[in-house]
Length: 237
Image (tube, rainbow, N blue to C red; front, side, top):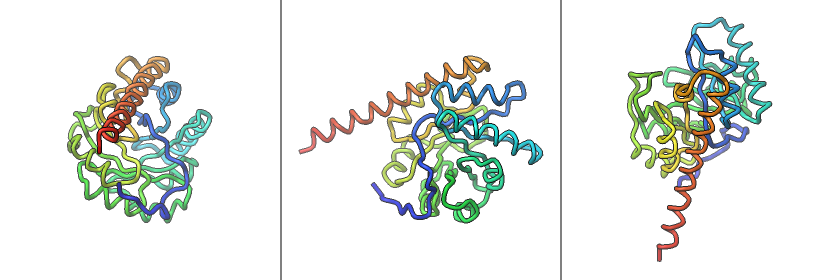
């Protein structure tokens, strides 16, 4: 596996596991979603919000960042490095139209994490890693109600990325509980889920229960991968 230069990366340790992304549902209390996801074992939360005043964004993100810290988890904000700094979040996630990774690192300094979207492009993922991304996100792997027009990524792309990238790999897009385990077994470190966490209801308790099922599936996928690798090693002359 490729070994990447870590000099330009964040110093915050990035976990592996369930990555909850806040939904745009107007009928759902933001705090209930995040608290439920954290109760169920999410280790990262992405605050994704559009068209709100910066004062409201800062207040909400700051509150969620504190909540994540209390649970030993990390808050990532979407798109905006300034909001990351104002809210004292753990990092930022950048898309194609956002600030380039190297410029974001120069603005944020050494501490915060930077994640970036590679969509369905392996070469873009390689470029983002070289620029200093702490994790690279591929997807959409399945039809997504959140972004129905998103480009589609494949399991073969994930396997190729696992062999060629050393940074953490995130998968996103329409991922159900069973699919979470499948992608974990193929090499995903972070499984990003939004609407999937709402399938059993929008209460904090229901979201927590669903998050626990995701975590169990992810851990089973990793266990399957370890068993497969051990078997291959044993059978190799």
